[in-house]
Image (cartoon, rainbow, N blue to C red; front, side):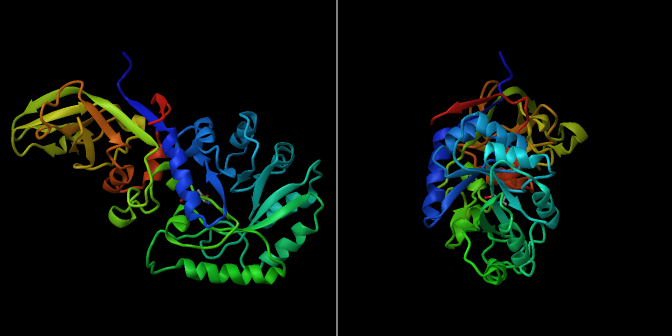
Length: 365
Ligand SMILES: *Cc1c(COP(=O)(O)O)cnc(C)c1O
């Protein structure tokens, strides 16, 4: 029998979440973001789950080519654009759109001789200070691109730093939009726009030509906050369920300790369950005691340190739990955002870190 750890990818939930994104996009076309192996879900699977998207967006040039080879015929966008001159003929050959965010990329484009025109997203830095031209520099960048015969359509793009927060103390979305509008106006012609990530789609209602949701398509929320901004409250469904089983049980007395570092000490007599899932599977090692885990449908919590192949849970109040009991680490019945919050991270990181050794199956339910 294989080790009982299994990740199930729910394709129908992907379709459902895509429809949810489309409903929030105010008529904008949807780039389904599939970077990082589709947030750990598998590129080919995501291509099928998001077959209804208007385009797929990612950062890996080789994965973009792979999407074409797998038969994706609609647009593909490279969110970081190209990394050196050798990427440009590949983009032209496979019809890949690319973001253009710096002078070095413009110089490479100016020097390139391409057989087909490529469409670009001109990226504006409106305060995040990661990638993009400042609002002052964007008109110059636009003019140089527009003069190149091998540049097709140009879409203006920016990325929000705090779209997930209701009242951020720094760089609220409105401030980024003011800068964006100033940069856009300086260009002198109206360009198509690509603005919102998941947080923008869920919490702000901006008009644009394209949206770029990622995490919401996978049933997570940008902030990971429980309550009114939880995935459930937004009508999103989990797309990845990580399940395992109890493979060992220990009944221990008060004062006994559990796991590496003996970090956990039993205050009373308790029943410890050992789950076949550890940090080498992508479960966060820094998840603290009490991080929620579902055993036989009952919520309980982690005890002791997560080890490479196993973690321990408290079975004292899980009636009938025994070797073979079903465990859900995250997904259906156990929101990934809650696990992430307890572990001091975000659902994105948990999904993306699913380790290659974990077998993956698909389900339509
Ligand atoms: C990853 C990414 C997105 C998607 O972000 P989510 O928060 O997952 O919705 C959108 N735009 C850009 C430029 C990105 O890099």
